[in-house]
Amino acid sequence: MIETVDFKSVIDQYKVIFFDSFGVIKNYKGLVPGIEETFAYLEANQKDYYIVTNDASRSPLQLAESFSKLGLDIITPDKIISSGMLAKEYLDLKVPDGIVAYLGTNDSAHYLDSSGLHVLPLRDINEDNVERVNALVFLDDEGFDWYQDLNKAVNLLRRRNIPAIVANTDDAYPLNKQEIAIAIGALAGMIEKITGKKFIRFGKPDSQMFTFAYDMVRENKSLNKKDILMVGDTLHTDILGGNKFGLDTVLVFTGNTLQQNAETRINATGILPTYICQAAVLS
Image (cartoon, rainbow, N blue to C red; front, side, top):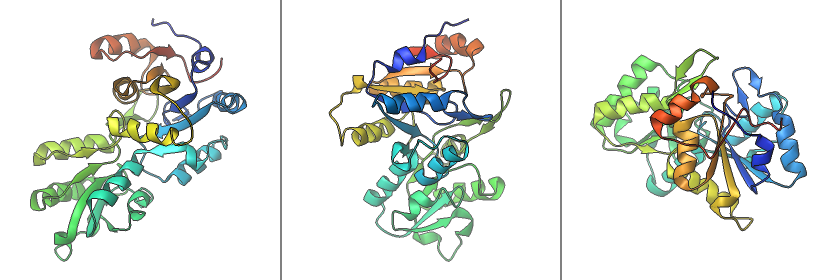
């Protein structure tokens, strides 16, 4: 079985900690036991932290409220960096007018609403407005009919030469210890293959996500990449993305990666975290 190191001894070496959300701070059971003490310790020792998440299903305010409802009220909206923020930035720069269609919940559309474009769920696109659709955004795996709307997405992209933006690149997420569910990143990948188009992706492991987060934390303090630690539960997103960007990384066993499978997965993928810990907790 793979050996782990003490999480406190790791974070003591860094000025800023990036945490993934689901699988690190919380999972299907609720908050990871002891995570409240981790954030209290960071605050007491004046170490900065951010939640760097592929969750574009809700706004930063709603994500912060979801932590508070679980009993972790220390995380404020300004500490949350979501891949949905990058989708908004892209739309602001590249799509000046028209309709932005999306797949996801009404809450996830927050990121698109704030860009000032006319935003509609894909189910509301019809012959009267289809020619005004200038972008399609994949936000969340809920909030739409998988059969009707995924077929509609394929045919929209065949008909209109528009950018398709994947705001959440996760392929799956854990439902419990034994089961996972398909995420919007996997659905987008399927449609990308069918249509033969190259989609624009924002989220871990893509470098844009880490560049965005890095630029945000450097607005108020002088830092370099070796001052920042990325904590995640998934090799192909958190750890690979952090490694490629030049950050040190920690793999934890409270989410997607189980300790009994970790060595096999690391050897098979070649994705090697800087450290491995049982959980993002102090003991």
